[in-house]
Image 1 (spheres, rainbow, N blue to C red):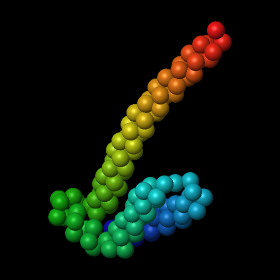
Image 2 (image 1 turned 180 degrees about the vertical axis):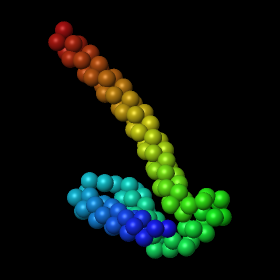
Image 3 (image 1 turned 120 degrees about the vertical axis):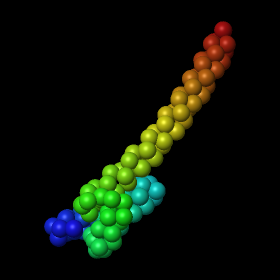
Image 4 (image 1 turned 180 degrees about the horizontal axis):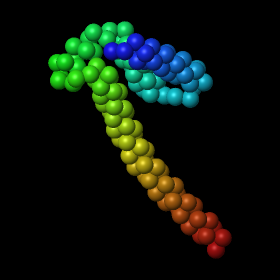
Length: 119
């Protein structure tokens, strides 16, 4: 693995860690999101510190270049994250729909009571 890629991975993961730490201090992120991004940063550091292991895994799978294996791992992790966010958004959409329906029913009941009182 080229040294420039290793340096970029380390710098990128450290920058990610610092950014996530700042967001956590300001309470702008949930703990589960922070854990994912810290895991991601740790994985990048691991890949850059132990390139021999990455080369070995790449050869084991049949990938010609360790760099391609790193990109494959990053893409895989991002797909997992994208899927988990899709599940979260779907759950929130269902909850929002239920909340909207409940609110509409309550508003209708309140309006009916107000009409009955005014008559």
